[in-house]
Length: 204
Image (cartoon, rainbow, N blue to C red):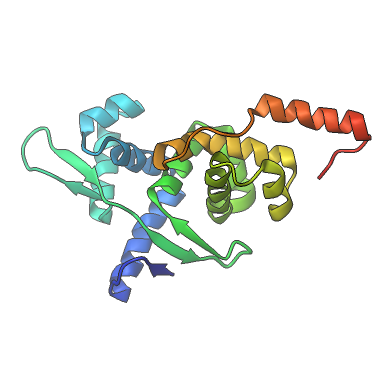
């Protein structure tokens, strides 16, 4: 594991362990992502935006502050918080090799609480797999790859690739400077059905 900046090894390990909590708890990731998106936020804002009970919102904010990924801005009321940037590179023991933990990836993990397609993809391919899919999603929105290329590279079906690309599209547009590109899921499904009708077999 390495980090983009020059940090003492012990500090990097502590930071990784803190960030690992975000990746293991989607609701915690959701809170961090909201704080990162808003710039500066309060517990009241979190309660209203994420439909959290007051006690739960305070618990999450305290955990994220203690972990060092949220910064409390003031001692007065209401207290406000700012998300600290996350930029870690992790070497995975899987075929994914290295992958990057960024606010965009944390946001994607947080969305598994409301998006079944992201939840299913993580169950099947893990966080490293989702990180790889997110990289393809960025490239697809920039028009440099297709869902079929992703499917071939990752040895998954074209439809599975397109489903996760569609699910990650809002994350891409939230965190990256890209313009909308690519077909809709309905267009892809229609194209898959047409390929089967024309050739008698589903292209993989």
